[in-house]
Structure formats: C-alpha cells, structure tokens
Length: 314
Image 1: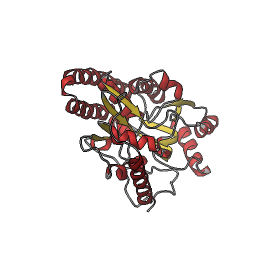
Image 2 (image 1 turned 60 degrees about the horizontal axis):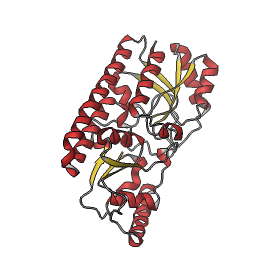
Image 3 (image 1 turned 45 degrees about the horizontal axis):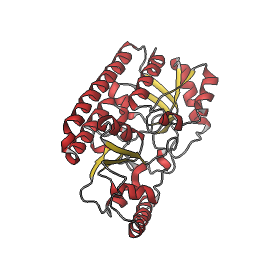
Image 4 (image 1 turned 45 degrees about the vertical axis):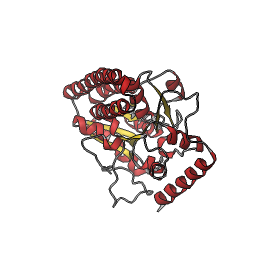
C-alpha cells in the first residue's frame, strides 16, 4: 500500500508540473539528452556516449539512492529527455507512476534489471538482521545488477543501441566506444576471476548492507552481512553483531567490509573485537561529491574492489 500511495503521489506531482511548465527543449539544450536515476547508469552512459550527449544524474552525489525523491525539476528533465535510464528496483518505485503519464512518445527507456540474463532475489542469510519494513514472504529482486561486470557490459549494449536509435549519424562512434569499454570490462572480469582462483577462502563478511549478490554469484563466493542490500534499518541487533564477530573468529577472516557512503561503525565494532582489518567495497550506487567532481568512474571503483577482494581472500 505504501508503494501504491507513493506512485500515486508522484503521478499527481508530475501532472501538476506538466500543467505549469513547457515540455519542449529550450534553445540551450542542444544535442542528445540522457537522464539517469543514479551513478552506475550515469557513468556507463557517459562511457558509451562520450561527448555525444548531455547526461544528467538525478541522484545528488553523496546521497543514498534508497531515500531519493524526485523534485519537480527532475520530473521535467525525465519528461524532456531522449533516453531515460533507471534501475527498476524498489528505490525507483516512483518512476512507474511518472512513466505512465509521460508526454514524450519518442523517449527511449532502459530499465537495468531488464538488461541481465538472470535476476536474483534479495537474500536473508544466517545471522542477518531482518528488515521489518519488508514482508519477507514476498520475493523482491535485488536491484544492484551492475555489480557484476558482465551485467555492466550488457547494460552498455542497451545504452549503445538506444543512442544509435536516436542519433544514427553518430552510431559508429557509439559502437566504437562500446567495443572499447567492453574490453575494459572484460579485463576487469578476468582480474576478479584470477583473484578468486588464487585466494585461500571464498567467504566475505560485510558489517553493512549487502548490495552485491550479483557480484558474489558471478564469482562463486559466499558472504555474511548485517543487512540485505535495500534494508531500511542501519542499526543491527546485538545478536547480529555477535554472529558476525564469531564468524570472523571461526574462519579467521582477515577483512571486514563496509560499502561506500556508510559510517562503517558496524565494521569498526567487528574489527575491534576480532583484529580484522576494515576495508571499503564499492557497490557503485553513488559516489562522494569530491569523487564526482574528480570524474571517478565505475571502472575505477571496481578496480579498487579487485585490490580489496585480494586482501579479503588471502
């Protein structure tokens, strides 16, 4: 019911905005317009488009994607764009209501969870804190599909296809960018495979949310974590923390991870009790304001993950 109410609210907001604002592009908005809800699709789009498109990210750098609400300006940007890219999970629940009322029949729409060969549901692993905001009897797909580099390549193919469709004149450039970037993703994939094959363990511990199901499934890894990927809670029970501490001790796990933009407090507690090292593992859902300004890329963050994974599996 909460989700339905939220969709209806955003639909009403959209209709009000459209009534008072023009929907066409202004003269200073020349070129292809691509609007993305969060960092991963934004960065993949700019890799493929190069300088051939104006690409906008709706989520502010440093913000949590799961608590994002669109502004009237954001809704107008979606209505006017040539290509709209969104994730499609619960954090993007507002999108469905907007798209049902959109006044842009030529807009190309890409939903990331439709770009993968296989979808996985969120998991509640042993010891994990249950999120009381969700009904655990209902299966919910994990939305963080881009954390597997092979899925990122599939997403890039869809982005290139959309760009070629709206800008056929520059199709050769987009396909060239696609081929180059897929080679980078392939090298990244091989690096992860190598680290896993050379590691002495297969288990990761996250003192945090765990938005990396697609990653561990891709490389045959196991994990334990405080919360599932889209959990609303941020404070685990003592039992959850104790379970993770015992797991680190029992398996002599050298690294406890936290994800980006997290306080890292849970990981700190586990590390203090076990002597493990705390490290960041990037889920690439967003970046800090400084990293955004510096032009940090998905591929950069994932190569940092290669180093972190090597330390965790030694």
